Image 1 (cartoon, rainbow, N blue to C red):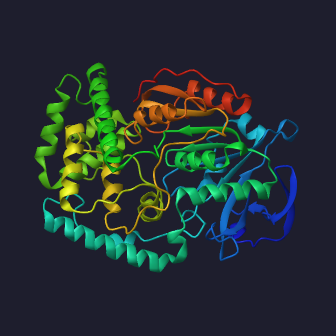
Image 2: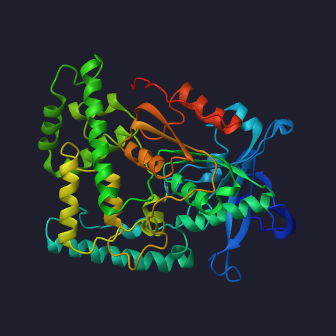
Image 3: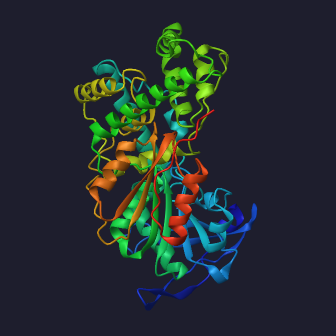
Length: 455
């Protein structure tokens, strides 16, 4: 996509906004270099939406045009989450059914700092990081100073985009794309962290939403204690489900054994590799890859085993500019860290906390000032009925977060539960796919879906 995404904005055109013709930038579409089915382009937007006359940046955008234009329903904006995932590439993926591809222009916008929208790449600055599990004041101070150095160098390397990549700003970008496309309303599908972008868009531009699916919700209302603690509880819940699967599945490498005892034995067998083993099992639970986890614990995968899943390409970098500005993750000292760590261990005695919850919270240690887009209670009173979807046993984004989102806005949300396992529910089964797509196509509110037994 690089060549097409590098094209400049060709013209200013009249677009329809609220029924009134206004001047605005357009997207100069061209065939995507690496995907002949897609169209790629860029859109110029303000760097700082509070200063629209100031500096500008270009966002990378891609779309798959509706294959049945006579039955076209409009635009479906999609985001795969991360943060760090390329929504432009995601829009051109084969995840979406032929009917969805026929009825919608599927549009992906690389959010600020990701993909081809001025990507923030600072992972190399994080080499030689002290332990994110400090055991004393000196360890915490070392982590704090390391983080402060990373933040300073990453900001210098990235330029001003680093301080303008929170989700509220991304929501403004999404609406700019809507205007450039000349659409009165859009539909939206956000997965995982893409649900934060969706929540902010529904708050700011609810009257511009035709339909919205928030799959595997990151609850933007939680404080640091719940950000870490809820995730810790969720990963233990998923491990319990894994153990139950082993009990009823003959092919499980730990079938007939005490799974919890085997887990503790595996952790004790290599103290230096204990945290790595925990992190690998955590990622496997997100699949879920229960058979792989069982083989890992049983030792049959060997010392070179790798985790089943990987994070987005620049997740480690862009989270500093996005997650740390969307949540109040400001652990000030070792005493506060110790209290939060104790809460993690209380709620997660099996897995010793959530990898992603702990990792993100400690990555934000040393970030100065309050967050640009602080967490708050959801207010989407201007939005239509939004579909909130979650697996009951999701180790990454707790089911409790989906429930809480629905509780905050009961009139404007409907909760659809997949009674199974893993992170991201939409592609799990024919039931989840049909439910989501019938909602997007016909605005039908679906019922829940039974679990599909994992491998």
